[in-house]
Image 1 (tube, helix red, strand yellow):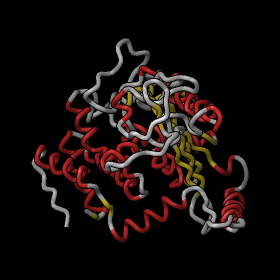
Image 2 (tube, rainbow, N blue to C red):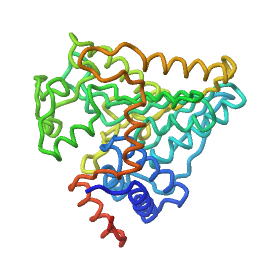
Image 3 (cartoon, rainbow, N blue to C red):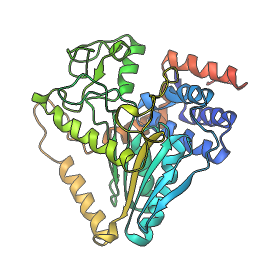
Length: 359
């Protein structure tokens, strides 16, 4: 079924309000999931909504967090998310980072005691509203094996950067540090399709095309896949995200990161509090005049768009192009939602005495 983005956003907001979120926080959380759907990251949009509700029901998520800064300097801070939605704690951290950047040139905020924060790009792009460069990281449930290992020690641990331009759209880099995001495996499961070789391995470390392999003790692979294809570089990037997000903030790291799924208990003897994030914002004019920078960004973008196209390819893309074009298309024609997700949304409507009846 294809459903308008505005309807999905309003329904999602109503669910968060029913869960107990203050209306302003419910609006922010719903917008984060909605942007994922608009940008084509279907695994992190309304498909995730029921997962947050199950965490709340298990008392592993606080709908009314008392977020507070527990340590800070003029340009840095640590935010305790009070076990709130990462969809809410990360935007608050970015707000603090941007305020610090206004006076210090840049602002950096580490978050502990949080939960899954949706797509990293959403949080990085918040800085664009202040004509700043935004940066967002988060660690995640341990589903990924370090290079040469079959143990699950890292998450998909995404990295996002948003860079403003003048007349051109901003450059937005939003990527997992694994060969693919975990949600892509979930999408394949719902479709009943196989996954490409190199995305994951079975519990013994052998290649597999089974998208359900994580349920059988298998693990995902770092960006690049195996050592011969540069998987060690993805491992390094994922490690950086884990350290910045959690070791720096006081959140759980490595195998102690609590799982997103509510039916699995968090690891015993945690080394920190909740899931961790790390966000940053910096003023362009802390380096060179902003207008000058953005004019050169326009030139950079145009230059790369005009790069010579390889045989058999249509055009050269700049980071953020596919998501921006998908947003335009889905705002016009609606968001395609799989039947399994629709069934989940109908169940949530019944649970919270809401109406789910998209036209």
